Length: 196
Image (cartoon, rainbow, N blue to C red):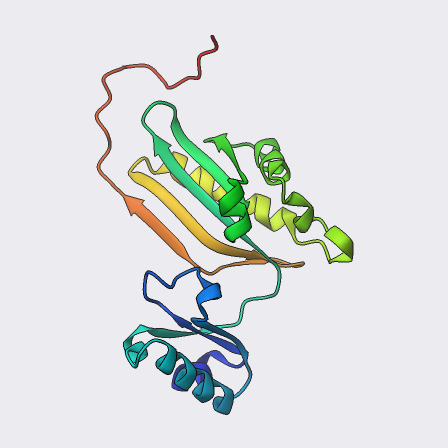
């Protein structure tokens, strides 16, 4: 309640246990809590759902703007270097493997194509009368992640999930960055794709 008072309502109450993260289908998230009574009720519900161990595993967050949930990732492949990935968040995208990829460093044309390549891209552009989201902000974030991975070779991976892209701006709700020692390279030249 103190955290919600500091952040300001509305807030979200979420379980932080690793097996519950990004799994709203398990009921471990309560959204749009507009007052103390609603927050306390949500806490009791989650406490009962999680078997009474919820107190150490709950977090209060300010509500993010409504929009389309997306996933941005960058990983380093030993054969080709860093790869930037984009897709929409959620089970359908995961099940269908609806993710697009580009090599780092990515250009503005690369990231514009990246977000349009996934099959679910119409959701970003106002599908069935919905308001289009801020693809300019999304493209800017993709360029920044690409630049970060290119500038800091110790970064082995970046995972931003979910990134909620709203009609105006976006919010990164989850971020993980893995840092590792630089891999030993046996070649002396720059990485390049070869065509066969």
